Amino acid sequence: MSAYVLKLIAIITMVFDHSGYLIYGHLSWMNFVGRIAFPIFAFQISEGYIHTHNLKKYFVRLIIFALISQIPYAWFGYCFFSNMSLNIIFTLILGLFSISIYEFIVSKGTLQCAPTSNYDSSSTVEQNKNNNIFQYKLLGIIIVLVIAVFADIFNFDYGFYGVFIIFLFYLYRNKKLSMNIAITILTFIYYTPYFMASNFKINYIGLFICSLIPLIFINLYNGQKGKDHKMLFYIFYPVHLLILCLIYTFIH
Image (cartoon, rainbow, N blue to C red; front, side, top):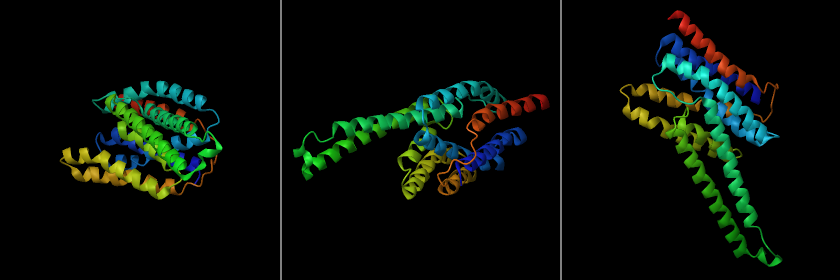
């Protein structure tokens, strides 16, 4: 399964999610289907970091479309929700930033822990080197956690969960079993407070299960790009929100 196919699955299920509020006005089966979308987008950000030829341009492109999308997203929020938040592209930006910060810290740690002479090749020195690198990795993870908390405090879409799932996809990119376990645990933690507070607990069981379905598609990913439609999501995201808002305004 190519990146292009994954992107199409994410876009189609995202439309289901947002259209559900227009059609039903409340949580419905369409929103359950919609839970498939975000983890795929999150995974593709982690892949984007790995494969991009210009990280700076990648950031700039995301920022531009995040700003453009915030207007129709705010309108959508006004039509269907009482609370306002920053759109999902801002969350993707923070996730990409988290990966960048983590890699920067780990790379600095690796350089500082490099042997300084031929006498630094003993097993004791090697063990100390590995311990020091581990400490830098731990520091990187702590900073990512801080960024994720920031997303939660300032009401980014999906908040802590949104940022940290991107980082986990990157961290365990070469360990599928660990990736699946880590994402399942994070998703469970994310939905538990909603489950405990809700009188309709079955809804959150369903949302939790549906949020894990995208792991099936992600595990089938073959590492191939597929058709090159780089701007598909960036353009489609604000446009489809704008169309849904216009329909809502017309029928009300």
